[in-house]
Length: 438
Image (cartoon, rainbow, N blue to C red; front, side, top):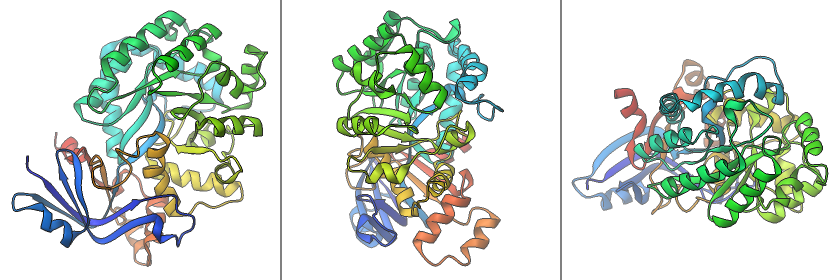
């Protein structure tokens, strides 16, 4: 197989950057090289050194002066909500009932699911994201459509059919047994097929009966290597309703704890209004709290206390995500721009290296896939994004005064969007230009 040699300014993280000057937390090459073969990075480092390993037949692609980073990772997103994004004027529960649930009924039609899956992954790649943790609709066919499209593109994605059997319209309900059976069938068909990963997906405690929560717990016990994803403590009305539905529970987190849904591969979207007991329970179990800033601002849900959660005595593992369609953009750059503002409103700051760690290695660690993606280390999958900090007139003008890598990253985060994404490689294949050409 012909190998590919990429040239550019390479940046990859080895750990969380404590400060803006914590240079040992990342690896940066001003003239870097990445040698790709069979979908993986086989050599990385200074271009002159990597070129010696490439051989005469390697295809050389020069991306200078652009930055090459690991492909972005989105830890919580709803692919059936593409036509819900930018829906006016409701908080969480009203928003679900008014916009989301009616939209998701359309996914009973397999053809509709295939169309939206294709467009969703197009949009994801266009914005530089190479891996998502996705919620499908309640319909088995929606998950089949998503996985088929993801597999055809050789993407590493985590996804699952939503389980929900109450407090929603008939067209988006399953039953405890059908939710279990459909999930088992999807796991058998798709988990581990190529780069596909399955997530057991009870939507949240409000839309799952105790019987269905028992089934979700049973699935987690039967498949301990799988992810589990759901929602937690997004909105005050949601928390109060959950308390009414599960009156025996100490708090919202206790519901999931009771049914055995906490764990190192458990992803809890939002986690804004956690008590200290709840945060301790998440920390003790290794569960992941997923920060969705554009959604939390748009729906008026609240401010995720990112830095405090990281530095508490029992720190939380944290992911970051778009949450589309409650969120307002498919871009992880835009997500971290809004995340910076949420953190600032909590009286803290997030430096640009921390932001880019979060959407690459940080999210890979949150999804327990850092051995595969999220870095530019040798042996990992060649999911790569190429970023142009001069992509727009406003960015070019600002770049005239940029003097450091930190300033350039912050510019990309603050003014960048899909236009700043020059190319995206998925398992070594140039996916964005192929998509445009196709």
